Image (cartoon, rainbow, N blue to C red; front, side, top):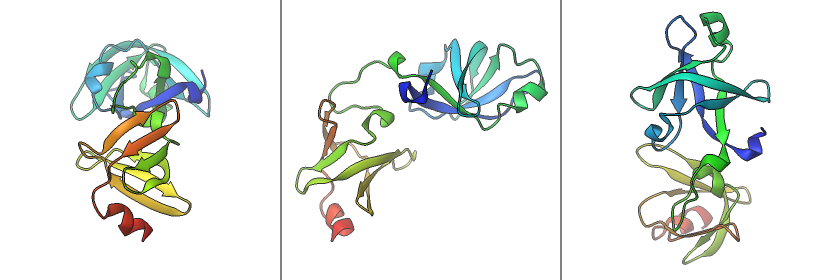
Length: 175
């Protein structure tokens, strides 16, 4: 499995007990969607290594206590700390309309209703209080709050994200 065919699920945050369990931070919108996983891929030295899950228990704030096959003690679990966790992108259901997965729109052209093409989407900054689209126009960064009604259209075929930025925001960044 290669990273290009996967999406970032989260990372191994810390140990959970002394019998090899780890605490997995699920960096996703709805952690409950992943409550019945049977396998994950962990990035070990730029190699995605599959691990089968013996048990997974969702905790609060996006964390899950996970017991992985073959990880029997604290020593072997420590080797997984702070490692990124991935899943194959093909398991995600296809979204329609103005809905999108953060990873699928990275690199899309961003086209504003008023200003036309304003740059390329570099990152979706997933802050709980105020998620942001980070758009790069050359060396200039434009941060647009990902609010209800912002995204007008997701054109997957042409890799374009059509938005209606709040009045004056684009001018603030581009002069």
